[in-house]
Amino acid sequence: MKFIAVFLLALVAVGNCGSVRNRATRSVSQETLDMVFDAFVYTYRTVVENYPADLVQEVVHEVLENDGAFNFSPELRAKLDDKRVELSAKLKVVMVEIAANGEELPDEVTDKLHEYFDYSVDYMLSLTPFELMEEITKEVLANGGAFDFSPKVLSMLEDTKATFKDGSKKLLDYEFEVFADLIELDDEFRQKIYTAMDYMVDRFFDAIPWDLLEDTVYFVLSNDGSIDLSDELWERIETTKDDLREQLREALDYVDELLGGGMKRVMLK
Image (cartoon, rainbow, N blue to C red; front, top):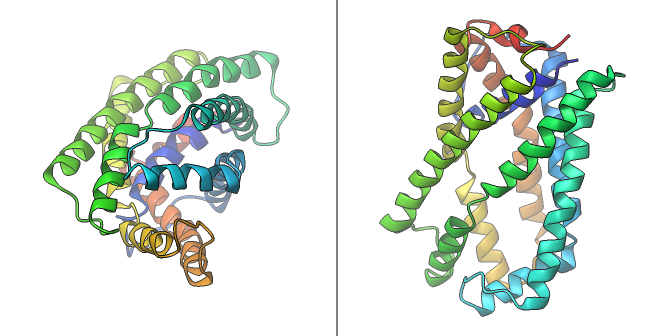
């Protein structure tokens, strides 16, 4: 069972996807690559499917009506609150399934997985930077769709990075605590993981596809707020998704090298 590899290394790898290029070394197995990539796809689909198109359209219309402010109507707020509860429950199930990786686990391990994800999923959702998202939306709409951020937004981005770094370390500490009898990490290797996590957060923000997001906003604004995207935009989105697998391969190789080939040390057998 390779739960730690999926949870930890996937997080580290995604942040490096846009930054580690032209690497010839291939130290990570196809099995690990497939496992991590499938975990991302499964999680992404769970989130997307939790929010139907008509609800997303309703959110977009209210945001546009309020010049980017997240001042949702009581009815819409109630819907979003309900969806957040649903998403939390779904993600907890999904994460346990990903962690098990199709294997029948001992009850002791399954109980630990539930214990960990019951906390970690809600904690990660609590880190969603709504204030930053709202400020970006306000500025983008004020600029007619252009992603020309002010010093205030850039400062908020840096603050969000710091929050994610701190939150990620807290989750790692909790993970190591819950699974202490299943994995062994010395202080030196733990510090390497912290370093990788800090680097991951920086690279994650660097890898955000701002150009694609900007063009998507322009399209929505030019179509009276409709989220019925053009075929061209969908093709670009698919191209971005297709490119992720190779970037993920490069990222996993990089992380394995950063950890001194230590990926196997944090895999549960």
